[in-house]
Image 1 (tube, rainbow, N blue to C red):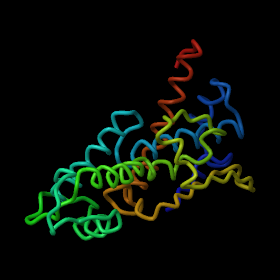
Image 2 (cartoon, rainbow, N blue to C red):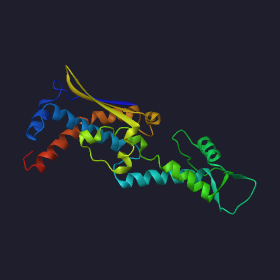
Image 3 (cartoon, helix red, strand yellow):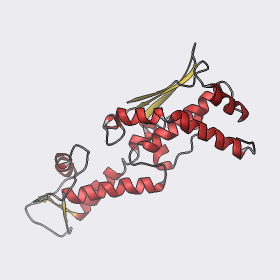
Image 4 (cartoon, rainbow, N blue to C red):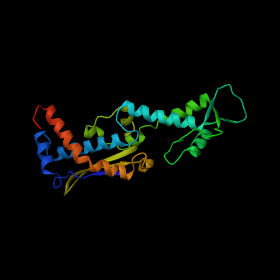
Length: 219
């Protein structure tokens, strides 16, 4: 999935935004970089799980554990029945087969396969370690753009790429998210991405106004 931020090249920026940016000490390429950073932060926020804080991470992890409990019946480590799912790879296969179109196991399945607690926990930790990957795929370049992101997102920025380009129409940024499932609507999807880009100008205006207030200047 790709996000191209080109709406604020020198020839395209609206005069109102350009004036706000100039008063905030952002001109030419600095303005474009700032605008790209605002766009990046807005996109990352809107990728599921929604938000930028630890609360969003907790929501994502809770959703994973809930889904796994719907897929499996957890039994004590001492259980030795013949109906056990015994290996991580086998647990993975059962989990993938049980997931719905939104990537979750929506309700407890009848005759859920049994898995020992220790195997269940090991597999669960592997799954929750992926929480934030979809967001991280849009976080590449955040250090140059000075976008503050929490570690659980920032650590996964290698899941995407960011390129800054100069051309006749000014500077532009392009972000490529390497996580294919981000294209699914329940994660972000093209519709969600277009929605974010549509509100970018409004979000940028608010961000510039906030910067001016912090600088002690009237809006």
